[in-house]
Length: 91
Image (tube, rainbow, N blue to C red; front, side):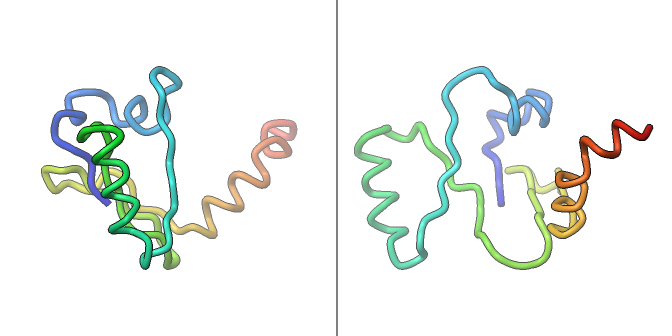
């Protein structure tokens, strides 16, 4: 996955998870990718960005300039998410 370099001047947590602005994340069947990208280009005139590919046991996010921003096991993230409230209640 990659993020455009114009976004790297901000904190990564704000770029990825910030509540400001209108952001959506969409997963598209690879067979429909070309059509989806054509639609986005027509509707949004370049104000969209491909982040990567879905699949596998790891989430890896690489900035447009190359450094790895996030690398984590999906199963570990799932367990953390599922147990977040219970963990806080027992802390």
